[in-house]
Structure formats: structure tokens, C-alpha cells
Length: 224
Ligand SMILES: *Cc1c(COP(=O)(O)O)cnc(C)c1O
Image (cartoon, rainbow, N blue to C red; front, side, top):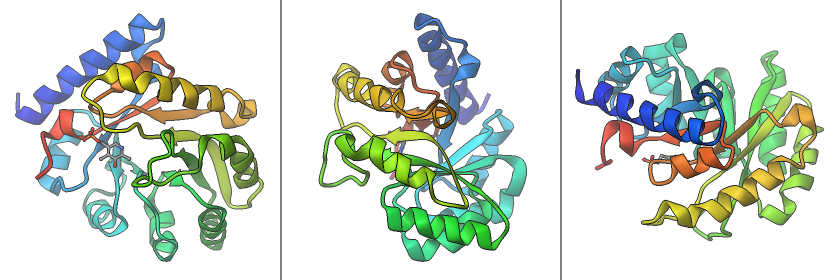
């Protein structure tokens, strides 16, 4: 087995164990392989090892990989999306996880409608109020989600959040719990995806109810 397939097998086993621990099926958690800075050959290797969902942070990088790989996988946009990149993004992204302003949401709706599509999106919540991160403040998230839902050309499917960098995954738990409680306040048809957990803390995220984990380093190794 290649390194990537090997890493993936280990991650999948950890996902399964965490899901089981919280009484859920492993199939209730989607593994999004985060491929920023990872070249297409290695992304292909991951796809051959069974990866079905790819997460990217930059539109240009994502687009060039999409042009090579197309519909082999579902594409997730997880980085800060600039309004002038929305037109390109809505052409191929299956789930925009990082909606953080009404202006951005409106642009996504407009550009999607223009090509006869409805864009699936998540609202990004800035869980710890970090200045270095994007996302809406937790205390505004539910109201903001309601406003996003009302925009045409968009289908809101849930929430995404990132925790602060921490050596101990337990430090992430309160943030995950907070995001889960916001998620539970959404209307039932908007509670489809709760995207939380990365290499440092995905097992805790699954225990707290994540339906989607976004994992780069544990699959592809450290980014240079
Ligand atoms: C890079 C990134 C990840 C993956 O981080 P790892 O620590 O490499 O697993 C997940 N989510 C977002 C939003 C990211 O930018």
C-alpha cells in the first residue's frame, strides 16, 4: 500500500472508532480530504484509495485540479472566498463551506442563478473569535443563517467551524459543543451538515456530532 492509502486507512479506522464511541455509524461522517498544496498526482492517489470528497482553500488551485479530475470527486470550498472568485467557484464547487458575509452569499446566489444552478453552502462560524480567522461570530450565526437561507440561488445545509490550533484535542471540545448547539437551533431542513474537526481534533468533533471532517495533514503529511 502507498503512503497515502496507508494514512487513509488509519484515518478511516479512527473515524469509525470515534463514530462508534458516540453510537453512530461511520457512514454518517463524510471524510473531506483537504488537498491545498497537494499536487494532482497525490490527489489521484487518494481518489484511487477511495476518497470521494476533496476540500480546497484557493479557487485557482481548486479549479486547475478540477479541470484534470472533474467529476471523479465532490468538490468542497473551505477557504475564504473572495467575491471576484465566486463566478469561477460556482461552476464546479459542490459545497461552499465558508460563507461569512451576506454580500458573499448574495453574489453566490446571483452567479448560481445565472447558470441555472442552486449552490449548496454552509455558514462559517468563527468559533473562538480569532482575528486571524474568518466566519461570523457565534452569537450572530443563527440569525445570519436565516438571512442566508432567504437568498435565491442558494441552499443552506448547515454550519462549518474551525478551532484554534491546540496540542490537546480536548481543548477543542467546548468549541465543537458550541457549534453543535448553534446547529441544533437551525430549522430541520437546514441541519444537514455540521462540518468540524481537522487532523488535530477530528475524533472529538465526531463525538460532538460532526457529519463532516476536513482532514489534510493526517492523509497527505505535513504541508511544506
Ligand atoms: C487546511 C484546512 C483543514 C485541514 O487541516 P489539517 O490540519 O491539515 O487536517 C481543514 N479545514 C480548513 C478550513 C483548512 O483550511
